[in-house]
Amino acid sequence: MESSNINIAAIRKDYTLKSFSESDLLKNPFDQFRVWFTEAIHAEVNEPNAMTLATVKPDGCPTARIVLLKGLEDDCFVFFTNYSSNKGQQIGVNNKVALVFFWPELERQVRIEGIAEKLEDYKSDEYFKSRPLASQIGAHASPQSQEIENRQYLEDLVIKMGELFSEKPIIRPNFWGGFKVTAHSFEFWQGRSSRLHDRFIFRKSNNEWLAKRLAP
Image: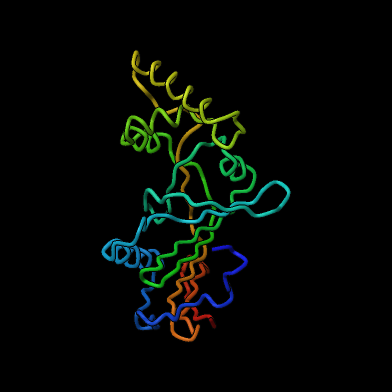
């Protein structure tokens, strides 16, 4: 079907699965996130740890992509990437970021704003060692975000790195590792009927989290 024949404006869904009230809300947003994240896993949401990561380009324009959450530690959100990638370089200039989780099977969304910092080297080393060998080689081979001539160029790099590390131990490249995002704002969104959604925002004030309901 041609896209011109699709009535995009008519696409809609009424959210009736759940509600989310003040009595359901935990005092700590990290605890609330862990509850919702666990429920997403139990609901067999497709890739529950997939999250949108938004960064800011040097010209001030926002940019976003999907990355995978790989850890929740010390109340931080952890993901891994090539530090030389677009997102890695952008965080190096402006470390204010936003994360979004969307779990359509539960009709839920969580928005997070915070500060990204590089993860400690030993933690990046530990995670790198836990990855499949092919992924470790791929991290070495891929000049992430750089323009390349064709697919064959990338596959040749993978073969070259595979041959190299067949002769010596593979270690984490210094241009690859983790970031941890310390949140200063959370928004929990539960879809409700007639677009009257339940929304609660947490903001930190004097080291204390305060929650308020937002109009949908």
